[in-house]
Image 1 (cartoon, helix red, strand yellow):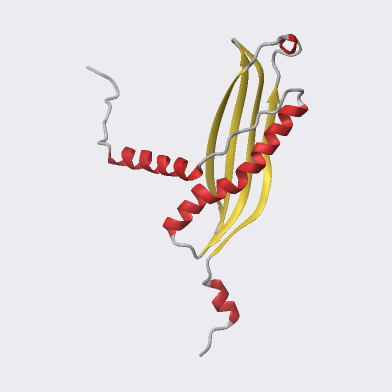
Image 2 (image 1 turned 90 degrees about the vertical axis):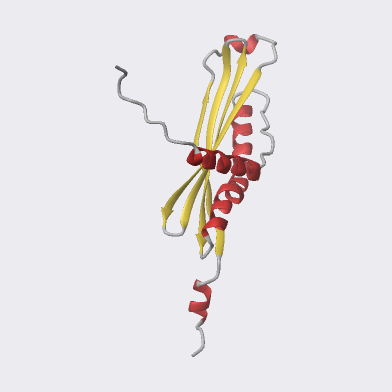
Length: 164
């Protein structure tokens, strides 16, 4: 009995990007136009996060989100939030490898699109672009894994509803 091409294909590992899209984009300039007349250098704060959600069997949505806040002293110059997502197909891949693909390779694929979209939005708002730095998603993944492992290894503390 020989294997049919259909049966052979179904056992092959599959990892591929199905779609990449801008999921959310928001830009605020709460203190314009007055703050635009100032000549100070703003302080820029960047917050990043990565989220993985199953969509259907074998498909996962990976979302990389960033919030960039530029301030002059205590006033906000601009605040931009963006979420770039990708739908990835993962089939016939061992769980430990799938976790690494979802935590490292997928965000690494989506992130350049987020960087470009945020820089474009900031430029279109009339500001010099903020170019986000490259991110080592492997280091981020390993740090999250060690934090999860430490949380799982920590003894549980039961807090009483009220103290007597």
